[in-house]
Image (cartoon, rainbow, N blue to C red; front, side, top):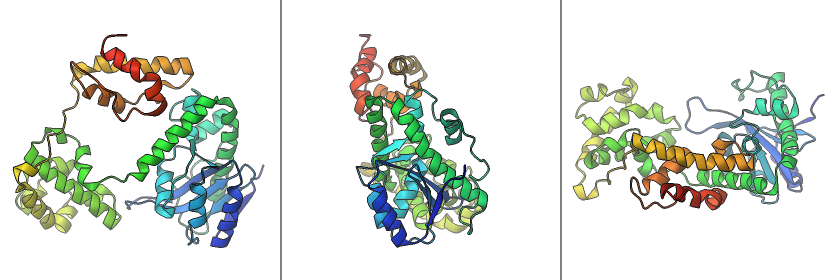
Length: 374
């Protein structure tokens, strides 16, 4: 059956529709974007589904996003998306706003134990029994006009996402509905806190192996890389490859020849930014000792794996009791953060990253495991 499709190509039309959508209990949303050689995604199409019609919003012709931003922020309208982290980037970049409340159908599948991290097509097939067209995901969404297959693909995404929500919602009890929205709110909150470039060094692989003076160099290089990627709108690895950061900070080359020999160093980076990098290294290497960063904590030793296994078992038991995919219960990073608060002999305390219903239902059980009370 053909899906009713409506294009939205001007500001006034979008504003009228947003006013209508704000009277609904929910809207389904999706985006198509391009991100090949850019730091930020380039919005190519926004889709909205209300269960009756698929609306295709053309961001190449819309100039006023204020009405759409107000819809995104309207607490009375649930925004339904699927595996939406990249969509959130598009919304934030395009409108300055993020969708709240947010209902992620991929999360809902996990809360119903249908599957964990299920792709959209597979979930639609599992729940609705429909086969979606393939092959358009990586096509050129910035071309105009879009092909007939692209339009069909985009419209079906919006329509079936609405149908998926209406099929999943009755299967969720009140607790699970609130937990999905809680997880959505946490995801949105994370996007509101943009990475501080001066903290980027903490995420560099093997950074914990560096001495404080070397960390001072790494901190400056990682911050420069992050700021340049944003300013140039280029991927971070196009500015300076990830695998070059650690050896740069460790060896601190003093000339272009030594710089070019750094692991994974791209010749283009040496030509374009070599002198800048050398100057940054010289300046950072001369940082007074009192201003060096604190050493970064070491990863947990292999011996800690048995305790991690016991902690995971807490989530697995609770997940089995609630009928939730075990992978959704307790993230590995959260359990590692918990262990690091007191390893090896304690005392332990719950990390800030363990929040909401998970903290309330499993926090004490986790502490009891570490204190051998369970």
